Amino acid sequence: MPTVIQYLLDRLKQLGIRDIFGVPGDFAFPINNAVCDDKELRWIGCCNELNAAYAADSYARIKGMSGLSTTFGVGELSALCGIAGSYAEYNLVFHIVGMPKMQAQKRHDIVHHSLGDGESSIFMEMAAPVVCASTMLTPENCVEEVERVIAAALENHRPVYIAIPHDYVNVEISSFTAPKETPVKSDPATLEEVVSTIAGKLSNAKQACIMPGFLVDRFDLKDLTMAVINASGLPYVTMALDKSVLDETNPSYLGLYMGQLINPEIREFVESCDCILAIGTIPSDINMGMFTAKLDKSRIINIMPSSVHIGYTDHINVKMLDVLEELSKRLNKRTDIKGPVARRLSTPKVNHEDLITADYLYTKYAEFFKPDDIIIADSSSSFYGLLPLVLPKGAKFESEMLWGAIGWATPASFGAALAAPDQRVILITGEGSHQMTAQEISQFYRYGLKPIIFVLNNQGYLIEKMLSEKLDYCYNDLAEWQYHKLPEVLGCNNWIMRKVTTCGELDKTMEELGSTKTGAYIEVVTPKLSASPLMEEIHKNL
Image (cartoon, rainbow, N blue to C red; front, top):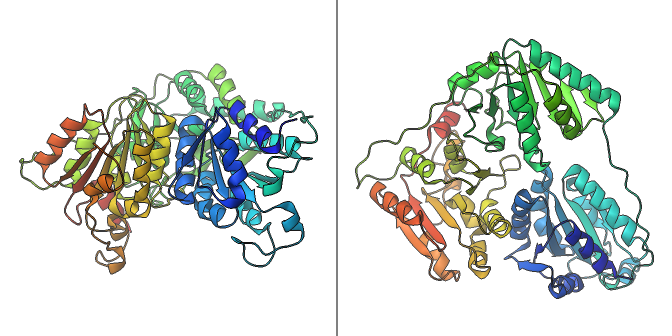
């Protein structure tokens, strides 16, 4: 019989997981050992558990799922912010926690990494709201519980919590009979009702569009969503959190809809539609243009993973996959609805010695990006500068703006680079975000990865300044770092490291990076309050 940890790791490998992120700890040593001793798995050590959770989150965005290992108490709580972000944004992470020995738990022994009260289950209880299933494995329940949490993870595409007592990790399981999992299917009557209603509304609408959301990507339904768009003949737009979920070079793509903040032609078209088919979108404050969007709920259909919302009517027990499959077969193609095309940003005319402004920087990013790039943006002013850009075919834009954890992007870019080592990974972050997790830069070189990193230095938290009534509150100031020297200190040998302050320096550096075969770290200095037009508009709308 396999041991508890062998059974769990074998099942994760069957799902396609090959890398386990984490930080070692004594309660988790047997788990750590098992990962390192398994020739099919790779232990990915991170600087701290929070960074490991962020990296696992991003890895799951690229690969569909990931593994994370932490120790009891201090380790798992350090990772909890990252796990909560994965829960909010539907990223499947298997979080494996090493616990104290079962006898110590039963005796309520006071152990290190605890609250000193002899209670060992409290941290699992803390994690419960941000995972879709949790369990503590024993030799007796191992098979049944592993299969249960895997089924929950795959169904909900959210994190699960798997704890293993220290003395149970290497004990052989008692039973090998796995429960039979019944696939969750749509209720046939509800499915027929919603598909017929949606098809009818789209056929009868005077003006309509489709609005695909990031859940289309999380549930691996991009091709099927595109099939629905092609079958409908309708144009599509995306909101902020959903950027690049589908190809932005497709003729049916109009551009970004973000309420009154940007693209007035697209706003007028979308808000004039008498039917909007949303597919996996979340009406958050940022998606709704800081609530400047004027969308009539009675005109909106939103297909979610396990429900469909048509106007004010909610239909449950119906799967997104089934709805999209039926719609792709039954929609009548419309050729009479055409939408406007968003204007592309034009590059400002500058001199070689001019200081770099936000306007110039973001248009240069647009020129720099290539097909199939993976672009990671932190929840900073850079996110809003990048949103209006039309990305090349196959380019993937990843941010964490629903959860909005500042500092996510640096370790997330590490996770993305591990998941896709043959693609160009570009990190674009502000200095405030970067200061929180900058030590993870060291891991790129350690694992032979070659990212391109742009760190925006504008003397503080620009996004926070633009969201404040006053621009000069001292809490938005930062310690001054010499950012471009960090890679050398952190062991990244032979990287391109530059500090650019003028347009000419930026142009020369980007040209050099276009063909680089090594890692690159570029500190981009702009004037203190130089913000993108979208960021300026958000400030005006406070």
